Amino acid sequence: MTALLEVEGLTKRFGGVAAVDDCSFSVEAGTITALIGPNGSGKTTAFNMITGYLKQDSGTVRFDGGAVERARPAQLYRRGLSRTFQQARIFPELTAIENLVVAAGFSWRDLFGRRVSKRDEERARRMLDEFRLSHLADLPAGDLSYGQRKLLEFAAVLMSSPKLVLLDEPTAGVNPVMIDAMERHIRERNAAGVTFLIVEHDMQLVMRLCDPVIVLDQGAPIAFGPPAAIQTDERVLEAYLGG
Image (cartoon, rainbow, N blue to C red; front, side, top):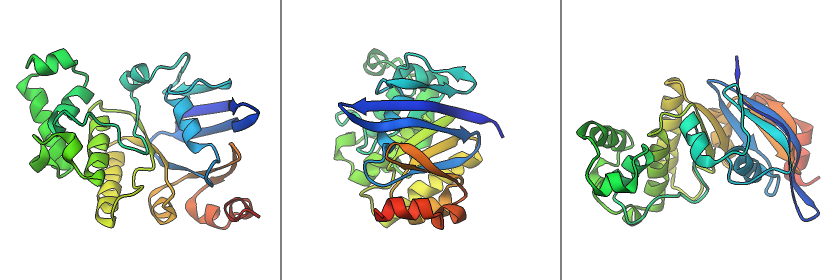
């Protein structure tokens, strides 16, 4: 397999505290890879540096064979690397379908000037239908439930036809029905060729969905491997139990 994402020596300090410390790992194309660890282990900070929302102090990131230098989220989005957030980022005053149209790369002027083609609008509606949100297409996104907003953000990310999607706590705070829906969509998109890197605290979900699993502790990887090996790794157990 080929590494789609390569992280080498990534470091970020806040004051005297190293949130991420000489962190190196890779994500192979075609996988659903988990990035887990205790609270404060540096997972979201690593995500923020990989996706250009936070500048690293040192280290390098390579995506799809090319170096990521002076990363900007919009540039990475166009290159095929996109992400979601712990708290879904949507445009609450736009309708659900307008959120998808904007995510597909249309400007606000295009949107409100009605220069969006019928073909692109139909694509957005198909995406809403796939996520079982079509009945909410014309509602303001801010009126959707928390779980529905999480699904809408995920659908919006997919409008760019990404190669790699970073999901930050995709099932946090959602009910079991929404968790099942999120898992189904991840599996379906992965089968269609999308690679995933997932930060997730639901270990049952991680163990049945992800392979391999990367474990961070104090900002650095301490274990890497299939779920069965991770569950019995003494370093992982010690990190989680605070031993």
